[in-house]
Image: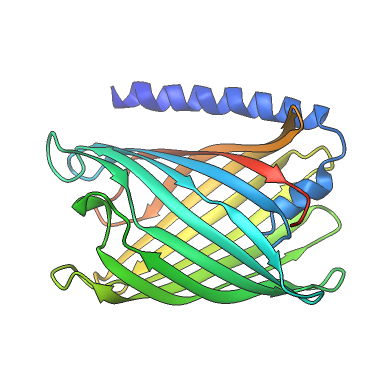
Length: 272
């Protein structure tokens, strides 16, 4: 059964790749929009919805589906400074992860980030720095931490005329309040990425996600290569991306055998 699910997702990847590349070729001059999309602190309003499907989790061979709604809103503070606000709102449904026959579905904890980003010089380093907040919004005990958290977050990247973006995002969150019966949060997250975009709007990227739980002394490293494209649905600009996920390092209780990530982003190129 597990292998059938994996094959279905591989077929879906191929189909979505074909569709997204075709749309990207028809979309016209969208290369600049794709370049902005590769930049986490670009002045681009967007509403990405990222889905993650993981199979064969832990000894119970569980499964988990996560939909991350990630609205991004840039706020221009001056000619030289922009505040980029970003939320990650996870909605999770998992089976056989916490126990045989157990199912948990609901909202997980929300992470809010704000990046103060100076206007970059042409061809210069693009960067942003600010606070990150963990908000205990989980609707089920197993889906969240029951802790309020805060810490710094930063992003830095470089974009070339050849359509390559190379950068990294990082944050560190510590819990500062919440349920005293739950474990404290002390977690580091590091996400290096490289993206290659073409003038058609098509692109390929490679993303690593490293998470270190200092409190629980656990390490996770995930690799996600993906392909992407941009098209228009009526007047609405939309980006698609899809690719597999690979566990490179993970504790046995959370390691998955196979995963897929797909994302659709609604783009609003005009700055507020």
